[in-house]
Image (tube, rainbow, N blue to C red; front, top):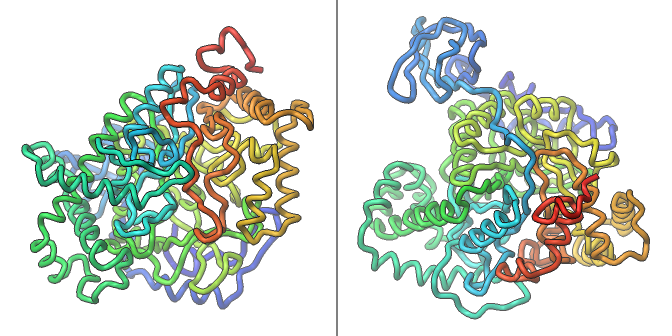
Length: 602
């Protein structure tokens, strides 16, 4: 793609209702001013992302990432290793990164089913009020005992270590490191049963973990891991120390601390070396506990569309992200007024100039240790809806990204980790996206609530589900409580909310579910439909399995309006095996231990 700002800003576009739209000139001018101009030599220095057998128009020596060397003469050789190399051109042009991708993601060999879980909500008596990695292990073992092949979990990325902790998993401080609130500690205090209290859990765990850190003996394994992760870990751990002292938004810190590579930050890291080591040690514990929790089961981790503008990644990658811009989406079927997700976007040309390293690190770190990746709003790899500061979601515009490069990087990371990749392609999806995902083996999303076609006709290259964290549970939809929840907490028009619910009920009744059916019968009807899908991954909502009425999140609402991301499962993890709901759901879908005895798969 060209990096000329005027060419990446999409002034004319088509909305979710197939209506042409034109962005006002004033909005385009604001976006262009933020974007800035790329250097004149960018096309000679930016990374080249390619595949074996492709022409490059270049020749030179290749320094392989494993320390070896190879020759490039225009066409990429079939034996050139996949990976991140350095091309030294023959014509004395600057060295540049050479990324060789397989062009396709790793794909499971056969259909699998699994549970979709909000980990923080999946609590047990020993998890200090927030579902943790020990609970994930229990969920994994339970799923394996039922014949399941994967779990899908919410983003587990770190937030600022200041109270109140950020509740949204989709607005993390970083996409490279994990949230220590998910660490399991042996001491568990009494906790409330009606909500998720992250602040109490973190305060308690911080004390216990600091005591364990002080009392530790052998650091050999940690030291080796720390050295391997390298500079990104040191930057993040330093940011955590600074955030504890000065707050979670680096813009509000003393000016001398704004530069992560400056003298003031270096001196502080030296003076507070023990604290920096503590936060690095927490990340090591997280990697160890996650590895033990996932075992051999695929756990699909979620990659949010962005990060907090005041967080660790935004601090480390200043100049690559757009100041004064947040991303979201225009009005669509998910939300009639559009959405602002609060995250600053990468400037496309600046991301290329950074060798795509921020994107590579984010994808690799999220896949690590679990074997699966769900890319939130995968359309953002093609274009993102930029919203200038002070404007509403309806007043944004689309900015295009180097999608071919980004997708091929995803393929390379998937290939290396043997990780399945799912692209969440809901909302306003432009032409060509579905085909580009399918060509690379990235599974699309198929949600019963949004599909007019019978699940039996859905593509095999997809993840099939009834609902998502932003949509009603079956029970909440069927008994009307979800409509009440939306009207009480959001500013959406009542007519739109009720019309949307009526449409979803019609989808649910595709097989003739009676109007006076029970909630349990409605859940069975939904998953009997889903069981007909040939999709490679069949994802079953744990909220639906246990009859939860409330969805995890109502988009567009604030913490003052609704306790998003804080709704606990009504059934403790340890009691799931004895609860009738999960077994009934699996029977309806035609999978699990009883599938052969009760073949409901249509």
